[in-house]
Length: 131
Image 1 (cartoon, helix red, strand yellow):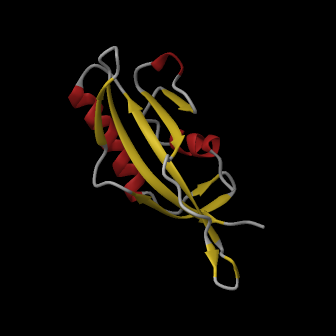
Image 2 (cartoon, helix red, strand yellow):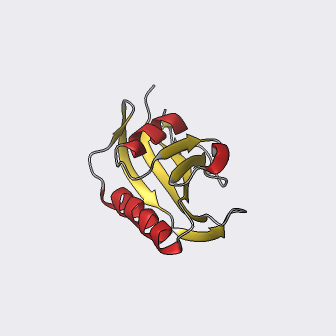
């Protein structure tokens, strides 16, 4: 099992943001990354005849960067590329089989009420199920 906190700690290794949050962006500080469960979920993974050897965790990443659209896009693309190319991943003590990005690039979701640009990356993490 992996948690949002495990994923937050994994993403900190890339050193792309100043602030990392799970659940809620407190005070919406610039150059922040919020880690959330994906709103749409899938049924549990079950193999015919018994349990499967993996599970899937849906994740939504909110890049809340600054008042410059270009800098925000670049920050989001850097994270996207890291996730797209990372290999031999362990999150917590759990082996990751695959990170599946669900969109071809980070999605522009506009600005917040203070004019800070935001982008979203959605992904699924396929990981080793431990009994």
